[in-house]
Length: 258
Ligand code: CAA
Image (cartoon, rainbow, N blue to C red):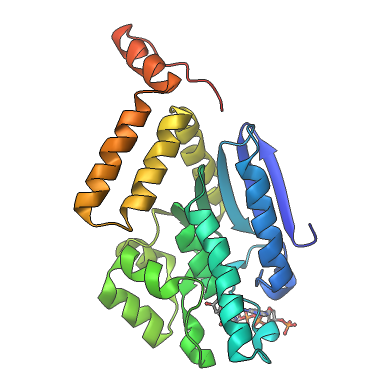
């Protein structure tokens, strides 16, 4: 991988986009590399939680690579949006929790990738934005869909049509990020969240993610039906046997790593 670094320890895999000279902007090759990395981690039983971040101290991901876009035809732009959406869908539907460690600019496609992650932790120096209108284009990797779902329509339109960046503190107020930390504590906080998830039943975590992800795309009535079905499936797992037994025996559950 030319543009991605990965490091795994204690079932936590840190993935870093590594193009600091371009503020980790995602060109086509890097989008493809990220997809390959996520597919590999998905099948890696030793990996339980993913933390996605950017190399350097200035940017998480400053968006799609604008230099690659300048000569795209409308048809190429549709294909490019679809490739980016495939990446954000892959992350959103990932069966292991993905935490975005937003260590700087998360703009355009970078904000969209962060929003596809299941949680976001921001360094106090992070800046979020959908600045596409400044380029005469619109978000293409899910920003018009995920941002209103996360922060509400009014705030999303303000960010998308206004094109201004918002600070980490403002992103927290809007519900766009779960936590804001100092730059030094960012990875520590993400690891703390990851470790907490790794103590839980892995099948239960996977089924919860699926219920939340799929449920968001359904009416509440259908989502509740879906939840009830997954609740049933949870009762077929070893996690359920161990979790409920441990409670009755007044001990900590010993879930099997998967
Ligand atoms: N694409 C390509 N290169 C980028 C880039 C991007 N999105 N963002 C930054 N870079 C490059 C710059 O061109 C510069 O490279 P050179 O030194 O070779 O000129 C290098 O990164 C450093 O950037 P700056 O000198 O601009 O750094 P700065 O601190 O002055 O400004 C910034 C930082 C405000 C983030 C500014 O770089 C910027 O506005 N970047 C563009 C952000 C943006 O518009 N993102 C949306 C892209 S479109 C998109 O993502 C559509 C979609 O929905 C998928």
